[in-house]
Length: 440
Image (tube, helix red, strand yellow):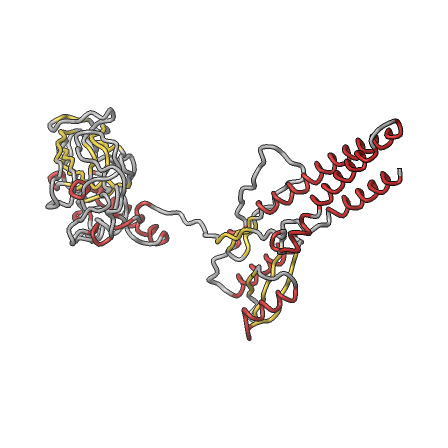
C-alpha cells in the first residue's frame, strides 16, 4: 500500500500547485508619465525594470516616472483611469471623454455554461478597447479540463488500487502499477504543459488583451454623402438644416404654389429632401427659395420611386451621355411638371412596365432607383463621376429599364452623372415655387 499512498500524496500536491501555474489571461499595463502629467500605456514590458526602460526610451527627456501593474485587473483599471483623467486635464483636444468611459459593451454569454469561464468587461483605456475574451476563455477552459482530468485520474487510481489490493488473490500486480503510473503521469503532463510552454516562450501562456482603436460614434447624415449632399461636418450640418428649414418656411409664407386640386408636392421616397449646399446654395440658388428648382432625396439602389402628385407619367431611356440625368421619369399633372433622374427601371411594384401616358395617383410606384454606374465605364471628363472615380460597381449590368431586372449597376448613360443612388427631382417653374409646394 506504500505506492498507493505515495501516488495519492503526490497527486494532491501537484493538483494544488497546478492552480498557481502561469497559464492565465495576463492583465499587464506599463503606464508612462511625462513631466506634463499626461501618460500613455504600452504593453511590451514583462517586468517592472523593462517597463521603466521602455518608458524612458519612449519619452526620453520628458520622462517622469512609470507604473507597472500585472495580474491585478482592479488596480490596472484604477491606474488606467488615472491616466485618462491626467490626459483630460492636460490635453483639451484628447479624443477620450468621460462619456466614452461610460459606454456599455456586450459581454459574451456561452451557450453551455462552463463554471470556470468568466469574462471581464471590455475596458476603454487611452482611446483603445481592451478585449480579453479569448485569453479568459482559454484560461477558464484549461482550468475546467484540469478538473475533468483530476476526476478521471482519481477514478483510474481507485481502479488501480483495487486491482493492486486484489493482486494477492491472483491479480496482476504489474498491470496495476502500470495503470497507476500512466494515470498520474498523464495528469502531471497535462498540468505542467504551461511550464513547458512558458520555458519555450512566456508569451505562449500570458494572453495579452486584444487592443482595438476606439472610434467615438458620430451620427452620420445621408445629406452629407458625396457631391449630392452638403459635404460638411455633422456640427455644420445642424446649422444647414436650420437654414434649409428657414428657407422652406419663407417659401411657404411668401412664395407661390400653382398646384391644383389642393395637391402638394409629396416625397418620392417617403423621406424629406436632402438639406445642404448642393441645390440650395450652388448653381446660383444662393439660399433664395425663388432660385431652388432641384432637390435630392436619399435612397438606395432599387428603391421604389413614388409619384409625388397625381398626373400622367412618361419615360425616356437614355442612350448616350448628352444628358447627365440618365434614365428619366416625367410626371405632369395637378398644375406641376417634374423630371426624376437616375432611374433603374420604369416598372411598378409587381415588376410590370408602366407605359408612357399612364395616369398615376400620388404615392403610386412609378419606377425603381438606379444610379450605380458599372466598373469600367468611362463618363465624360467634365462629369463629377469621372472626377470622383465613382464608376466602380461590380456585378450584373442592367440593360433594359422596361424590365425589373436583377442587376446591380448600369451603363454610364443610364445611370447619369451621380455619385450613387439618390432621387434627383427637377422642377418646372410652371408649378410656382418648388419649396412653396412642398408637403409638410
